[in-house]
Image (cartoon, rainbow, N blue to C red; front, side):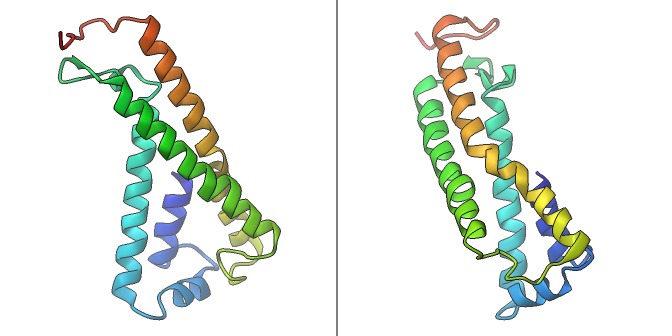
Length: 151
């Protein structure tokens, strides 16, 4: 969530020290840039919400019926691997080799804020894989109260 909030604040010009970055990202087409940034943030927050469902009781039952395990576990594994590749492996490798996502436009305190906002996303993929494993194990051993089976 912090990276999505930072991205939206940056794109609307409310994040101090990011004016150069905003101009850099939106140089070609401002409308496409705004739609992309807001859309990416919405998708990211939606995926994060579903990830939380792996460890919350509301993720076990939908409309009074037990949630089928196989599609949830498959989506959790694929999503966890994708997020691990994007943010834990690829993004960290790029930063360590000197390729900053802001192209060097952000400095000082705004850079520290950006790093603090993006740091939690590095752990999202591995934590999603762990939550998916826990969801799978919990479904094998625990009956969800109030859920009807599809038998």
